[in-house]
Length: 161
Image (cartoon, rainbow, N blue to C red; front, side, top):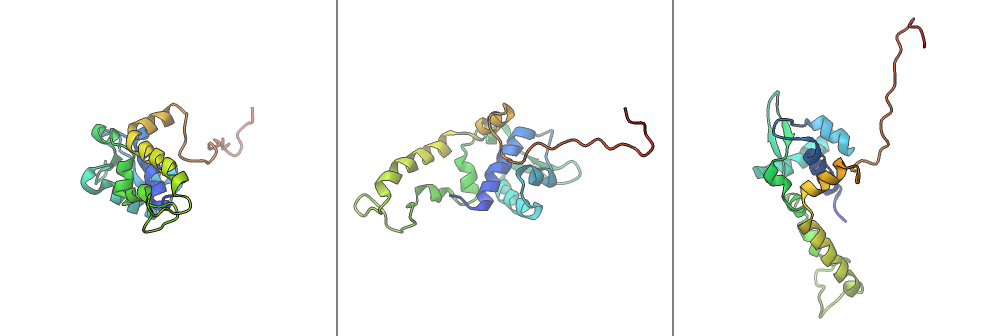
């Protein structure tokens, strides 16, 4: 439904909301790994999200990184789509026709109309904070990779117990 960049932007914003604060900023490498995205691509996405500090905020320097403010946490998820310039996707014809309306419907217009309203409602009523809280509670996930297995490395010559 959305571009790969917007999918990563959604994931990155949720991850940052879950794991950061003004006192605990996240670095690019950490965010890229968490959302399973190449660092250079993630950097471009974060650049769009930090424009005017609307969704994500950033600080440069040795103690810098990315975080989300309390005010931005209250934003609807649609704000991410707007930052990525993909908010109009929700209102487009499902077949991509330039003219699709009640008077000139595409073959899927009447069925998709209900779904489209539900999608718009979802993106306008769910907040970034709500999605981050669901992740914190373990209800949802943004990375489908299985949990990392900790490997114990034994020193040569050490006795095994």
